[in-house]
Image 1 (tube, rainbow, N blue to C red):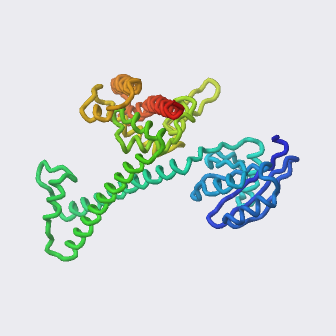
Image 2: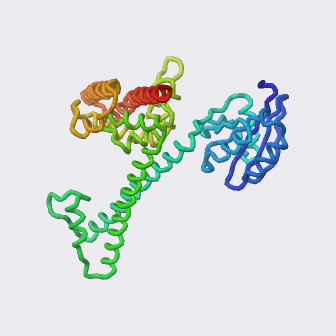
Image 3: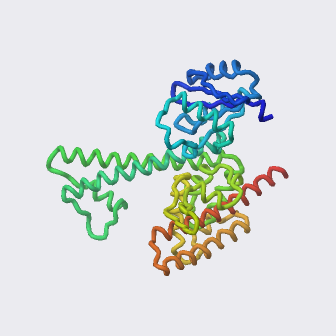
Length: 375
């Protein structure tokens, strides 16, 4: 079947698509540039012959997966390629859309490309919402920094013992008055922005809660199961579920660790073994959640009121995995700290191992969900 396939390389931009084709006999040629519109894509597929003989690919980028779904509707098998894993020639200094499309087609035919996982419409919409909330939290932090640094620059200090961004701190900021109108206007604008960002975060978190209720049973089971772990509440659990989609697609915890970019880089040759910092080549959102959750494993294993509440209704086998994670990761944290390891490196190592427990709970939850549907 492979000998009869024609391989399409698509260099996709917002308005145009450069197209190249690799024929079974070895010829690779450019087909020019078409508009990035559904009608143009339909005409291209019709012109090139039976859709079952076509196999297309393009690099993941800002255009998302719209082209993937358009080709799927036309019956064309398509894969989205990881751009960071594209093979390149060190001496090649000429880059054009035509050459990029030809390189995609040639490499795709030879099997040298690495496809990425394409989420379904439900998973992608939930992921967009989770990332919008993350962006809102970042904007909130920037707004708070602007206001606090403005107060610092103008000599304003809260009372001793008042912690930043508590109710008492906010009340203190609201009662500050400047004699100069310009400064007072600045204070009011910065304060309004902080309050607006807080309302935005609350609104998005409520939208996430509502979206989870409408999500697939598998995602709901994964979110419920992950919250049985220490350091992973609802928002973190939803983020993990949205970023990973189907956790069972990872054959082992090591694959999930590699996907998160928390594994160490390596440059070994012969008798020399040299490992460096983590690769950071995977999903940054997943890596952030894992490292943030890892900080809680510095504390002795216990099940507090909040964690006990989250574990209500969770299967016992998932609770056992979560308790095993507390014991193991606490011991590992203490062992690395006793060895004099840097605290940040320790937390990163614990976060990497935490992903193994996340994988185990995710697979258990997805299996239970599929068994319930089968029954």
